[in-house]
Image (cartoon, rainbow, N blue to C red):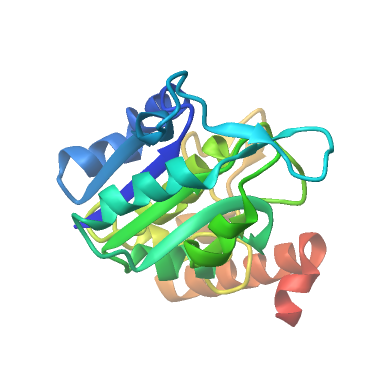
Length: 226
């Protein structure tokens, strides 16, 4: 089983994404266990504050090290983590290869940043990997964490009803996925390619490969260079 702990100051923001669709079924099948931890429960401040002004001045509050340390100590008393991930815009860009790697882990912790970020000592001493979902800034790391978790969980064996489906996703082989079609065969005179109705599976696979190659050349040529 894959166990993922999420550290956040906004736990309610994450409950919705985890209670539906594939993520919900993965938990029901007991293939994945997701736990959300409120960092405010681990602060010694009577007002449950987890942030403070930054040394040296400047706009924006900074998440304090102590509540995060206390939370991680509590979690590490229960299990050994293979990765403690911090969601941050300046981390390594999330891609399919990273999702593949993380889906083979057993225990992962994910820290969701907020405000101006976290005390740099958190990053220096607690974090093993920093991940970004893109070159832009959001209000916090909760939504990026949900994106990361979704990309990981769907790859866990048994989560998808057709396990081969994930193998043909875009980016798995550094190419975009080919076009897909379903019923009706003809709609508004727009017809499904004859090859897909031929029943010649070898020819169909060749067609799909060629279409994927052409789509990648047109839309994301840099993937082929990688």
